Image (cartoon, rainbow, N blue to C red; front, side, top):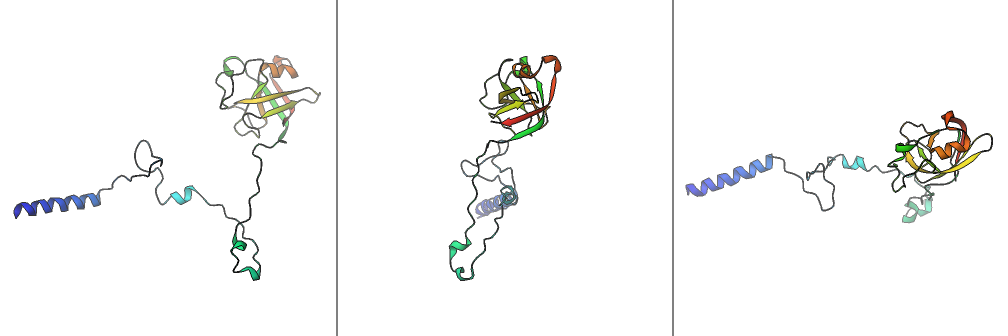
Length: 186
């Protein structure tokens, strides 16, 4: 009897401590873990905030369509092409980069350019994207078409870095900086 009481006391104590000590949350297969632990990196009460819903303006519902569920459906969304042509920057600035600066371009899958490549590096807030072809024109009518293969951390939205080959289309390398250019996505 004493032995049974001790066993029951031990089981009860284990159950109470298990209820008081927080256990790791187990996640469904494929769910993300945080730093190798099986616990979500967002608390459950914050999950709804991590996936906000964008409200859709209600459509006008005719008075005679109250029982018609199709009148309550959200309007169809407009589809747009992600990288549309027509992006243009006036008053653009161009500098050049060369040699070892050309190694390891930031755009995924981009080949490593050479000093004579017709390529460019853009800022992180540029209206252009990796892979875009950009026509650079100066006020004298000279132009060159470059492909974006890299990022320029020090550039602003209207400034791109080009290779020596591109820069020399407009001026000698001793100029260092060109301004007043127009850049248009092709």
